[in-house]
Image 1 (cartoon, rainbow over the protein chains, first blue to last red):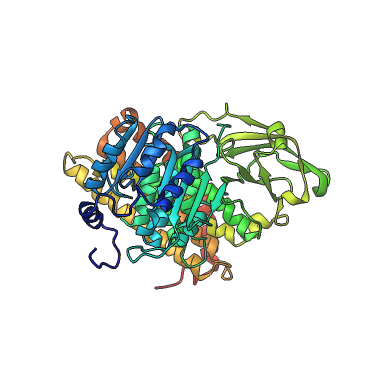
Image 2: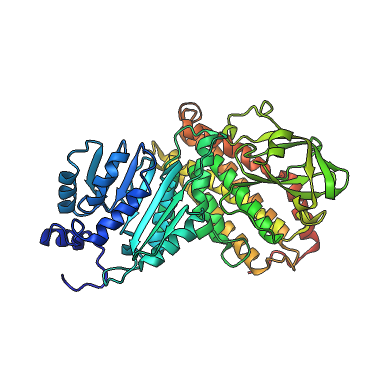
Length: 198
Length: 341
């Protein structure tokens, strides 16, 4: 890997995926499999009309989320990763994987599930704050935002995972209905209030 | 455009062409995290950022701006009263007076009942909390609009509002059928609402919304091909008017930041001056807009027809010659106001 202070450009990720199909060992690492299982455990109690997973990488989490979604829009900035993810999710026609980066390619439509996993570190504080505000505005009343980030240190991160979750909690101020930071990652879930009176 | 402006633009892009009250509620709720994060209070050094935010919202949609302006005013009032606002809820301020306002608290304030009716309650069934100015005792109170008592003892009269302008912000008449009031509902002492310095500071906010509405009209002119020299002349005059509105808002914000406690007594005439100027500039832009584009936008264009109607109503929030008379009276007795260059 080339030394680079902050690796968050699409070129950086594209190069990683071209050098190795699974650069973070998402498929076989016990840590990642356990982390995915924890995310799925916290979404599986219902079905979602329309879900969004930005930064889907090679689609390992996407394929686990798919059974609970009538439609799932997954996105990654690396075309190589997008192609791998498409192949991984080929049995789920409700999954659409396309190339795109946040915040510029944030979809126009609204969602009732947004999974924000391993992505927040690649933004600076201000950009993350703006992004979280925008993601929240894309959530339907009653919808869920679930965030999960590793709590270790990496040179290509602009923010520590704990800081990502701190910023999200400060901005959302809604009471998260779940908080788990004991297994080397932070996992939090926020629900947007249901609005039945109008 | 800054990242912050982009964030607002993105959130506002969600509004449909003909928003309903539910759409406005959702848009206002979606702006809450942005407001908590980026919109500073009035009079604490960056008032212009607050006014500019309102202008941006109004430029997109005046109905939404009307709701947001009320929310920001109400939460600022609670801050001044050192009461905590629930930052995840929408607030409104209902303080319109006049002879039709029959609100009063009967019995003791510790265990009284709110009776009577109030006009011009913007967002009446949209907001979660409302600050209500009780006319008879000049007392501000806070109401939880979602409480069981509120649901049972509040009546909304939607029939009085005849205009298409602001029809979806539900600016209805609210009637209170002996709603129980305790000391916990009271915000400040009697007379506090109008006497606090913040009242003068908050008076700039509606003007920022008027300015934004007029800028939306100018945007509509700039989005199309100018058909002749007359159109170009009008555009020149309209953009000059928007620049002078921006300058006046900046000047007013600077005055407020320099004397947030209103120790000079200049803050209310300052607000009157800014509001007058902006009301005139908006009237000029409304006039020139029609002279430039003719009747079509009034009748064929959903967004512009509504923007024209709403701006026309909104600027009537100023008290025209009565405000000018008050300003003139102040000037008569204060030779040093406004301070010389």
